[in-house]
Image (cartoon, rainbow, N blue to C red; front, side, top):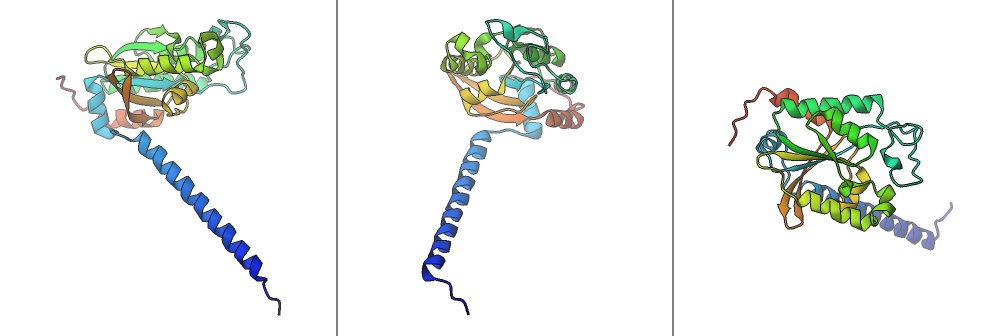
Length: 233
């Protein structure tokens, strides 16, 4: 009968122990990320009612794009092109989704004051398709891929952080439409295409993460609460 060598058994136990430690560390890391993203969070009716009162910055990543297209930036200003041969543009489904999200926000009677967008065609088009108000272009929330034209990634992150800490006009919310790489650099929160990340500005360069809302969640909230009467304060 074959016998296992003692050193082999010890080696196997050691490898198993290392594997358990790795799993535990990954679990702790994931827990920390989730906890950070739900700090002071709101959901469902409480979220809708809070947004109806205003006072939040709602950051959208542009809607779905055609990933068969590539950004080709060789000089300043190339990013404003709406030519799919030069820059990645919204897909047909992305345009439809942007319109549906805007419709849900209007149905929920959520007041929008100002709308800002990165100068990229795909962000401006997302903002326009949402139809929440005139979109003002700003380089404060510029794509990190062209950071070299705007003082570097740290400068863009600082401007984005300042935007997130600015309070909206009275009893309204501010909409910002930009890019995922900008927000994750500035806040460590990474949005999917067309996803909204809600922040409550605290002033003095500070803000609080409140919620993340997918296009599907906007549709669900609108279907559930669109007929719920809103009584202004």
